[in-house]
Length: 71
Image (tube, rainbow, N blue to C red):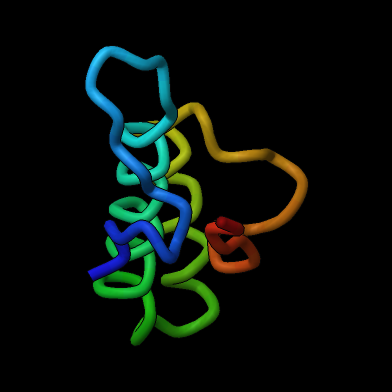
């Protein structure tokens, strides 16, 4: 749904682009809210710790629930 020219995901064969990185960031965002959205405060803290152990690219300043993908 997000992979459109309107959202800045123009795929030009042969050119270096960040399409795969953006799609990965969107996927991580979806995982955060699909699996962690219904957790209570303690569960969110544990989910934050577990997700950071799996994906080291998430900034460490706030919880994973404080971030969004900025196109």
